[in-house]
Length: 135
Image (cartoon, rainbow, N blue to C red; front, top):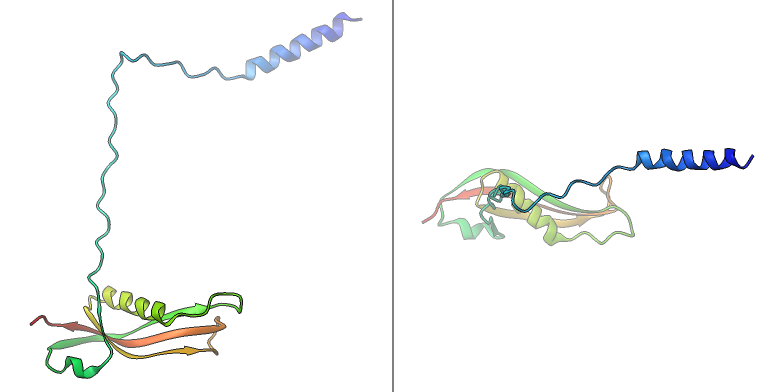
């Protein structure tokens, strides 16, 4: 009677050992492997900074072309979120102007509104994207 449990125990231990995976063989140092260098990729080029004009009189003596309206915003989703920031909205407006190949923005207005869809409060900046010729 004692032989049967001992046989079952031996079979179960032998069965588990067959599931064990043997470790990878150790490669000798005599075989030379060529290390692969990681590919060096260029970082994405940063857009040139977009100058912000707050007064239209600053553009009187400079030739420029109007590329269209741009806007930037910063949303406060709920009362627990950080309040909207006008500087962030202004920076997002400049980024959108850079995407339009503009090098300047004439700021029309920045304001914080509290009755916008999806936001508890929202900072909004609007302006015109400009391509100012260098003199």
